[in-house]
Length: 317
Image (tube, helix red, strand yellow):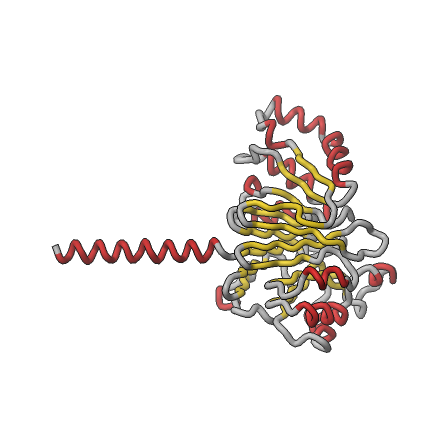
């Protein structure tokens, strides 16, 4: 009887541990940097795309080159993506969308429900033209491959600034940013269970972003390194330099600042960190493709293909 009681107590203890671990995990936001690059093709940094997992929702922000492949590398089922939020309609932010949409529908087990898409004015028109462009493929896949008709449906909304998604305690807020002549362009804030993540989208120094990112847990911000960028000057004018980003971080005070959409993609830490440190001494990391950031009571980072010893509670480089 004593042995049986001990076993029962141990079993209950294991169940309680599992329950509390699951509860703790459920209260986290997980941010996966699928692509941290820009238009230039490269194998180290794919096109801009970020997956945010909050509660039971998987939300994709932008779908640049290789977004679907990066999801596969992280063993995340593309059929489970609840929706795609576009910051703006520059090609490097959307060129991976047809692959995500159609391959994610076709390859089994594929998506069997409509895919929601939110984006600035022009998004509905773009998606309607994509449906026309791929009409032959869609028809053949349904008649020959027996792909589920519902899985290829796009439910699209042109959005304005404000709350654009709110379900199961997960709230997504769009806010306008300044990407030069590209108007409208949005950043997004995700709030869940007292945790928050802000994604800047493409922008130069934006007072509106600073307002929406006050006290955020994680701020993922784009950056251009003028010291090594040899393209048109207008590109630098429409993006945020490391020194300017340092001002943003200093004014918003995130628990962790992260660089993504790095221009040029060859920019290294020595091109980005020192100018940022002129005004911002806090936790900062240069994002990498497939980097996963866990946002909970502590912030942890996992770098793909490396040991768990690379995870730090503050995430700083």
